Length: 283
Image 1: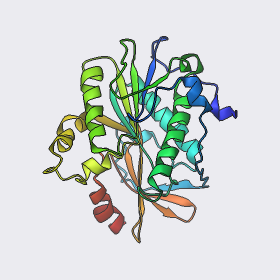
Image 2: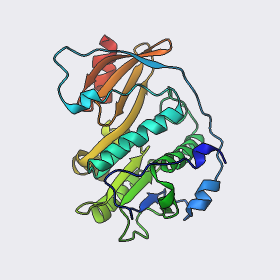
Image 3: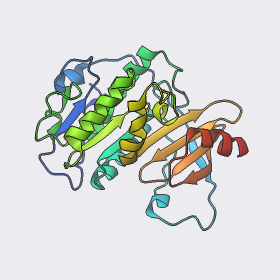
């Protein structure tokens, strides 16, 4: 077992010593103990890239707010990505954010959804969520980590739910909303949605006429959610990246050789259409 599968961790500041983590998997997977989870092996390609954030295109007066000071470069590989996601999540947990989203490509840092075959992308997500939990959860609490069905076996002492890749069936996000509503909202618990491809819902990929309950999430669940880590790639002549690491701003990056150039940033999440048509096309 390598060092990354069992890293030395620092406890989360401000978290109670008896914190228990509840890892929620897709309903098709069985209940696994943490030791079984550690023993799983996956075939996933890790891509390392020597890249750096080159410049930031910000007006001189646009320096207010603490989030602007949290300047995180685009990750060079998945090790750096997971470390950034862990740190962003720790800050969000400490800030008391109840519902969080983590979203990034799994077929390569420059890939887009659909670049990899569905089963391979899921395998990649399974590997990455395991490594993310290894980083986030301190060793003394790891033995209490459980993987369970979406709404089954919720225990009173559970405080953090991590929902992994609920996107293969449109009904899965409805179950996530139910879990949030019944087990998280109006409690001290917190939830992370990990690689849920929520942009499908945001962009109207599922027509509201055929999927009215899914469309309702845009006004019921999504406004309560903070995206703590996010990468979305845009291909083509005006390609680039939409990137965010909480509590920093949303950045639109363009890659020039081995460097990423920041061409725009803002506090609120822009739509993918705005990035593609209004920002990257004019940068």
